[in-house]
Image (tube, rainbow, N blue to C red; front, side, top):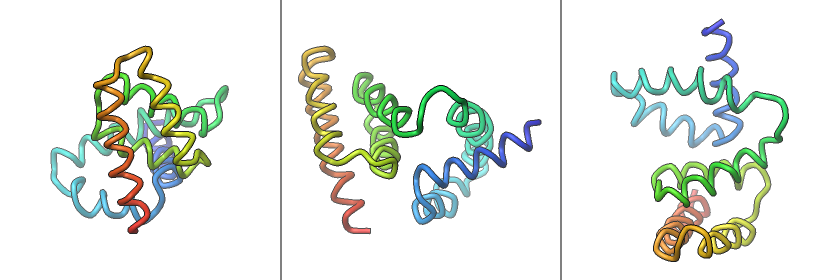
Length: 128
């Protein structure tokens, strides 16, 4: 069962982040033995189990991750989830507006950092 979930998870992860970015992570950060273990876990538990559940489409799931990251100040994860969201059809304008909307609920400092992260991420993606 775990191998099946991991296989499903690897495919889902690639779908969400794109082949080129998945290859970049796999051939860089996730080459380290400690991070290989983390990758195996997330491929099975997060991408193979959570992201493949019925009930929500991938576009909605991606936005939930963006909002969660911004609300908790998880800027490195926000970069990754912004990529997922763009790959699922959200636009830069829609994502920026969703982040701006959070200012009244989680505070301007968190939103400012999230917007700066979004700007940086959008530039990186455009340059790829």
